[in-house]
Image (cartoon, rainbow, N blue to C red; front, side):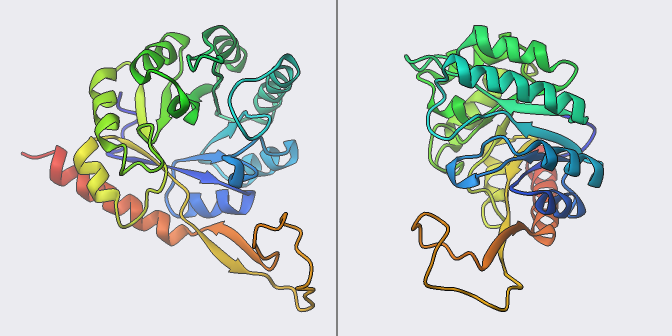
Length: 261
């Protein structure tokens, strides 16, 4: 599936409204807004969704995930997901990013399909729950049948470069039925390789840098980050220049390897 009229599309996983704005400045045409990136991303606040929509014109997709951990949700968690879909729609989001699995590792077709219907006319990306599924090709068939526009995957490996063989196979298998979007660890150093070996038209990146806090007074004896050796005095924000650089490299590589005359 060709996602739009552009040669290559770069989607940025933004951990804040500031990151979303910076990503758009760098040329990102789609933003996935998340909170709590350290747990793989959960649904951001309603206020953050509204602020992002007002501050940027790029397509805004919001992750619908009630907590970190696995992708098997109880009735209360599923109810929260449905409420958040409605909130995203009312806030003017263009799409959502979600996914539910059954305990046996298969896609929960019934409940995910209900979220897709509830989200309409917003589009839906099936997120990296896909990478935790038991059979990637059966999972892809299910995601297609549900009506998702794309699937986010690292090829069921920790990083996209490790899963590039499966990613390429999934792209060939999907044909024009759905867009398969590589993710995880994609940056300036490996984007050309991934474009060459997968031929994907969309890539999901974060490209964040640590920005020093403007606080003058610092109490370094206390950490609010759960003892994870993270300083409160650095904030991670998407770097617009890095986004611009990766997009340029991706377009150049796609022209070189997949649009040969």
